Length: 205
Ligand SMILES: C[S@@+](CC[C@H](N)C(=O)[O-])C[C@H]1O[C@@H](n2cnc3c(N)ncnc32)[C@H](O)[C@@H]1O
Image (cartoon, rainbow, N blue to C red; front, side, top):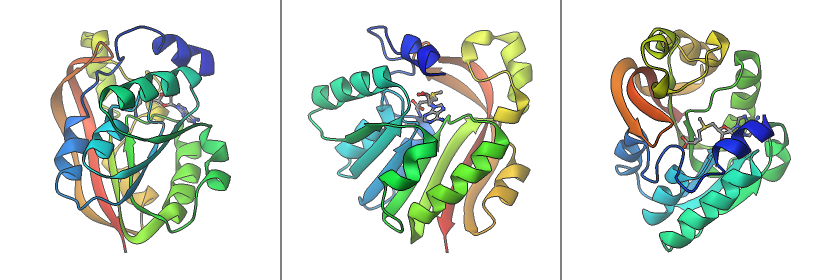
């Protein structure tokens, strides 16, 4: 895994662009700044955007190369982010419980059994009243990938999202928005074309 992502991030260009994800931006722009955690933040297009919006940013990713690109993007934008090179498995011991106002999972594709375990851990880090912001490819996205592989995303259906899974995986969250939609992606060379995504915005009661 490490090698694959390090290679993806080794180019000069940003794999998913330098601009934040549209859904993430749409939501973060409506929230008062606080403390945000971005797991699997990659080159930190969303972490850097949050810092520009005056959020205090903690981010992590298992790729060392991702962090290098993330820190360059932060410097370019004149902001500070706290970024650790760690795996999800190590996150619990690295962060403070009941601390974050928001946690964002943008295109975080991991096998479902592991994902549910990680969600529990992440929810323990979220304050009561805090938000989860998530966008990722849906299970139907496989059909879109067959038409256009440039749209990106994993080919293993178990790593893809469904609205039903989100409902069962986050029973303790109030659902503010949960939808599966077809969108046009233009996020660097990594996400280019029409795809099917799940968008979720939830609040911890
Ligand atoms: C599709 S990229 C998305 C990056 C970023 N969230 C974005 O939207 O630009 C997925 C990221 O998940 C990270 N990742 C995958 N498995 C991980 C794990 N077990 N622990 C930490 N990071 C992981 C990869 O290194 C990669 O940067």
